[in-house]
Image 1 (cartoon, rainbow, N blue to C red):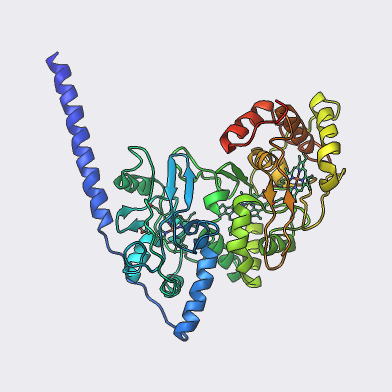
Image 2: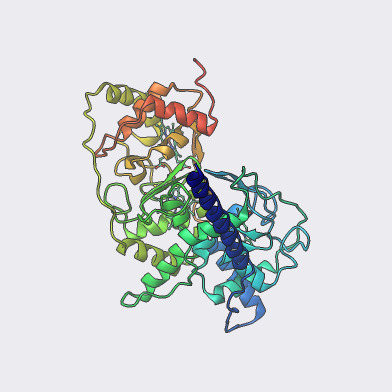
Length: 430
Ligand code: HEC
Ligand code: HEC
Ligand code: HEC
């Protein structure tokens, strides 16, 4: 008995010491200072602000820090994470509720190192990617942020349940998943590819959505091989021929990032926002760089299940639904309309293992991107109220297994779960 008590006491003792140790470690980390930013300050201050505006577009800061339709950078946008809702901060120049009284050092500490005035930031703010940004880009970005008109708006930052609301725990997350390292060009590859590497993995934070996450929200090792977020699937960006960008030419990638649409796909959901706020503003050279980088990363392993036979009852029903509900726009041969209505045949998204985006678009509808290069976005009607789970499952199974496509079928329970998660309407006839 005494022995057990001693063991328990030892374990509890170690636990307490460990906890106090970690707390001290976390506090020390929070109060750290980082190397001062070194810049050349070339050009006039107006030129610097202009460059900073471009950096803000590369980093897509507006996507999260603006509630659609409200003042830019005033914060309050809600990010759904597996741990709960996190709200993006007010980053206008308001001295009380924004970052108007911050210094460049504090701004850098938040954006590249993930530590704000109130302690560690949640990685919903993509500092793990921004850490790669250069000193020059940070200084330019700050020069631009200083020009943002102040907006007084208090953002109650997060509504996370205990223990996720304890910021000091993020020191542990950082220890596991955060590499606080600036980008260094890879020797032996072209300057163009290095620029693409910087844009994709640094400010562009493409991996935030296109890389899968583990249970703690850290990146899985399969970089850029597809991820799921907020009810959407962000496809594989490696040159995989079936579920990745393998079939897209450099031009096709450029057109998509510039206008949100090409011969194959039309961006919806979070990617539509990324195109509208960010990629459409990138220079031709930077888009070339992104494409060049994506084209030379190793292709993910090809998984291509055998196509479901056309005689399968789901396929027969699916074909009928396609004819009555979808063909007018998407065409009987699944080729769609260039730059307007996505083609199903040969689509990485349609062939993806995870059908989340397909379910999302069919249940909730989607608006195409409106960009300077593509001013009239087309729309996809919502079918939640119009179609039974069986019919949606059948038509998605059909488009995933026709015209050379092959992917696992979509089940009625997949549709049912998606309806609940997306808050879709019920089928009216039900
Ligand atoms: C994917 C969404 C997302 C993007 C993109 C994003 N942020 Fe954030 N940001 C957040 C969230 C969420 C928070 C609040 C995190 C928290 O409460 O821990 C935040 C916090 C901040 C903070 C700390 C503010 C404070 O009061 O503590 C700053 C500064 C900031 N972001 C600047 C930027 C800049 C500059 C960019 C673009 C380079 C950017 N953010 C892009 C989501 C984002
Ligand atoms: C906020 C999340 C998010 C970010 C950040 C993001 N993407 Fe996406 N991306 C998506 C989603 C979701 C889709 C699927 C959209 C659809 O099906 O309409 C997508 C689709 C794409 C596609 C089309 C793939 C296909 O086969 O149809 C390309 C190309 C792409 N993204 C490139 C990028 C690049 C390059 C970056 C970084 C500069 C990036 N994305 C950043 C979420 C994101
Ligand atoms: C009125 C024309 C129209 C009809 C009818 C229509 N669609 Fe669409 N569909 C679109 C447009 C436009 C988009 C692109 C929307 C966007 O990306 O914002 C789209 C997108 C999609 C996507 C997303 C593809 C991708 O690569 O992300 C799927 C899946 C889809 N439709 C399936 C269907 C199905 C199934 C039906 C029939 C039940 C259907 N659509 C009926 C116009 C239509």
